[in-house]
Amino acid sequence: MQIAKVIGSATATIKHSSLVGWKLLVVQVLLADGRSPDGEPMLAVDALGAGPGQWVMISSDGKGTRELIGDNRTPVRWTVLGICDT
Image (tube, rainbow, N blue to C red; front, side):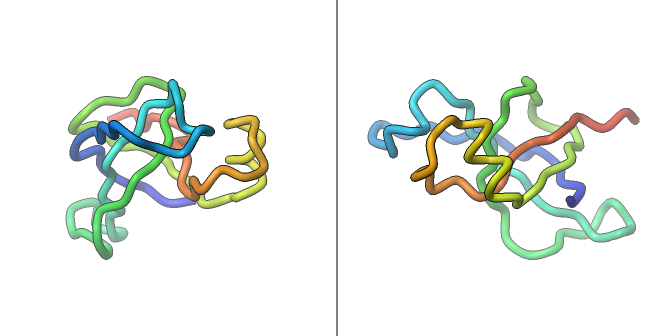
């Protein structure tokens, strides 16, 4: 599990069938200081309704993501687990 900041959303005209109806966020993982980026931004599936500027907890647990999506073939790796309080 990691803390990331939502920096935007992604829209796809063509996507894997398992992603139809799911909101995709562009998130930037942060270092422990809560300000410095840790690597490149990435996509995460969001079922909680997070928005730009919010901090979220994300996970790369493949099994949990497949269960959430309901498809064992989904290419998704990152999932939003929670929205952090400020």
